[in-house]
Image (tube, rainbow, N blue to C red; front, side, top):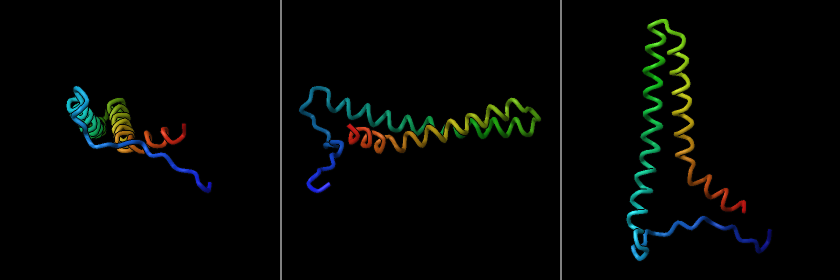
Length: 93
């Protein structure tokens, strides 16, 4: 490994020279927060559905709520690890 350089995913500062570059940066920022908001919404919806199913003696509602919670956890993990995943895939090629 002597002399081998590890590549990093380029993460430049926003550059307004690209036509529409500011808009692209803004949309990517919105998508980042939308992904986290969707993950939190999944956790909240799942928690409510699980509670309603538990106290209402409805197994199907409780089971569906557990799936929503697991989906919210998965979405939060993917949203949080998106940069690491992109860096790993970039370095693997």
